[in-house]
Image (cartoon, rainbow over all chains, first blue to last red; front, side):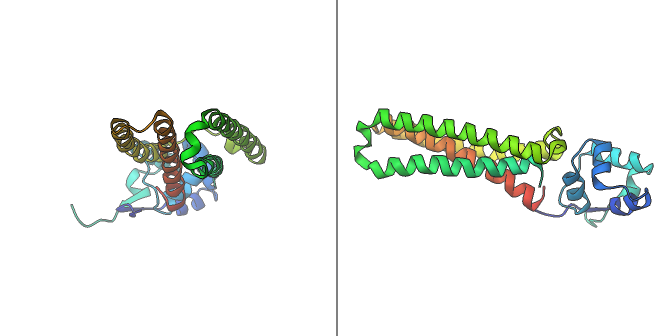
Length: 73
Length: 140
């Protein structure tokens, strides 16, 4: 499975948010712990809605959570 | 491993064991199977009943082991993985139906046609579940 053309700082943000667990974050946005783990590892690209929800949990704009890394168009 | 992934594994193993046994018996009967319609109909009922019992038991055991996961609703990744598995199974089903239609056209008997259709359904279900397990394991 190809890696998505973006990285994310969810793991760091969880740590900074009082060492929030993957399960806690998953519960806040309505996905399983495994889905959060897959997003963190770049194995799954979340929907736009889930991405915004994650950013909302941390009180950050979307581009501070997810960072586009593909240099192409 | 999520509750759903565990259930997929249980389904896959139960289907392979149950229908593997059924089709092994069918192949062992060979050309004489056409005179054993009632026997194989009974065998099929036994396999399907066995699958229902095994899957119910597996679901209960896994739900007791992890009640919170068992009651969790399907999330977006689960739904996408489900769709992907169904996508591959659907196209296998379409090709298989055409193949069975051709077999009927060339004069194969009803018993063979019905078992070919059953085999096709088992194949499609195996592909659907297998793809879903693969995507859960490899990431999606």
